Length: 174
Image: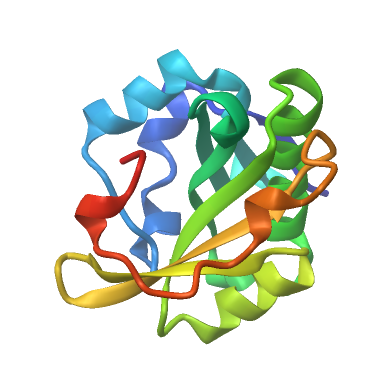
């Protein structure tokens, strides 16, 4: 049985094994603590039997006006728990918080352009490729900015794709 709950400080000491995936971005401890303190509604952990960490999602809400949006900073599921809809459940949770509590216009995320399985999963969840960000990952690999409109964006303006790629210094929010 899977339990999804708010991430806690103690979880920081237990989730290292999930971060071992080469496609998972890892951050320093103060980065995680900042998210935990500022956006606790956007930081959840999925646990299995024996309190084993199966995966987690970390995000935030940011922007102004029609750019007010939820952002997925990281979502990852340990390899042995993939293909069980766990990432979908975590994404739905963040989308619900963005939509119903913070009244955001859209949710966005960045994914490596080479991470085809993740891109396909996000597309199944209703995300579109909004734009390509050249050399987004460590100045080497391109990233894709993917978005999903929420109920507040009735006209779906937030998901009209840009025609040209951009560079990281052109991003509105880091």
